[in-house]
Amino acid sequence: AKSAGRGNFQFFIAEMNEHAIERLKLESGIRRAIEAEEFLLHYQPQFDGPSRRLVGVEALLRWQHPELGMVGPDRFIPVAEDTGLIAVLGEWVLRKACEQQVRWRHARQENLQVAINISPLQLRRPDFIDKVKHIIAETGANPQFIELEITESALTQPTMELVARLNELVDTGVTLALDDFGTGYSSLAILRKLPIDRLKLDRSFVQDLPGDAEDAAIASAALSIARDLSMEVVAEGVETEAQFAYLLERGCHIMQGYLFSKPMSVEAFDESFPPGRRL
Ligand code: C2E
Ligand code: CA
Ligand code: CA
Ligand code: CA
Image (tube, rainbow, N blue to C red):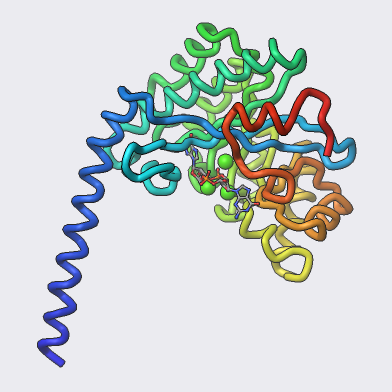
C-alpha cells in the first residue's frame, strides 16, 4: 500500500508539473497571441421571446491557436486572471466588441445590444472606468447598447467603493447585468443597492427545467426579484422548446441558448441573422 501511495504521489507531482508547464505555456502564449491577433470574438444571439425579435448578442472570447485549434475561454481566462494579463485581454475585448457594435449599426440600420463579459479583476482596476470611457469615445459606440456582464459572485458582498464604481460605470451610459445569477446567493438587500438592469439566470438552473422543482423555484425567485426591482431576466443555456415555453410562460422574456444558436463568428452571424430576422 505504501509503495502504491508513493507512486500516486509521484504521479501527482508529475501531473502538477504538467499543469504548471501548461500554464506557463499558456501565459507566454497569451502575450504572443495578442500580438499575433489570434484572439477573436464569437457572438451568440439573444431573442425577445414574446416578439420573437433578435435584440442583442453576447460577445464570447475565442483563441484561434495555430497548433491547438480553437481554444475556449474556460482554459485561458483563469490563466489571464492569475497573471494579470486579463487587463490587456479584457481591454482588447471591450474595444473589439464596441467596434463591432458600430459596424452593425451602420450595416443593419438597427442597434444590436452587445453584452461583454468583464472579469471581476478588471472591474477592480483603478483605471477601468477611464478605459471604458476612452474606448466608447474612440470607437463611437452607443453606450446605451453596451451591456457589461459581471458575475454575481463578485458582487455578493460589495464594498461601498465597488458600489460607487458601478454607479460611475452606469454614468458612462452603459448598462450592467449580473451574470451567472443564482450561483452567488445575493440578498435582495444587496441587489437593491446595485445599479443593475438585468439578471442572467445561470444555465445550471435552466438545464433541468421544467422537471426539476428546485431549479423551478430558483427561476421563479429570480423572476420575482427582477419584477420587484424593475430588472429584466435573461435566461442563458436554453436548449429545448420545453425550457423556452416554460420560461416564457412565467414572464422571462429574453432568451439565449443553443435552441436558437451557438456563438458564432461575425460572418456566420450575419448570414444566419440578417436585419429583421425573427425566431
Ligand atoms: P458565460 O458568460 O456564462 O457564457 C455562457 C457560456 O455558455 C458560453 O461558453 C456559451 O458558449 C455557453 N452556452 C451558451 N448557450 C448554451 C447552451 O444552450 N448550452 C450550453 N451547454 N452552453 C451554452 P463559452 O463561450 O465557452 O464561455 C465560457 C465562459 O468564459 C463565459 O461564461 C464567461 O464567464 C467566460 N468568458 C467568455 N468570454 C469572455 C471575455 O471576453 N471576458 C471574460 N472575462 N470572460 C469571458
Ligand atoms: Ca456572460
Ligand atoms: Ca453562466
Ligand atoms: Ca460564467
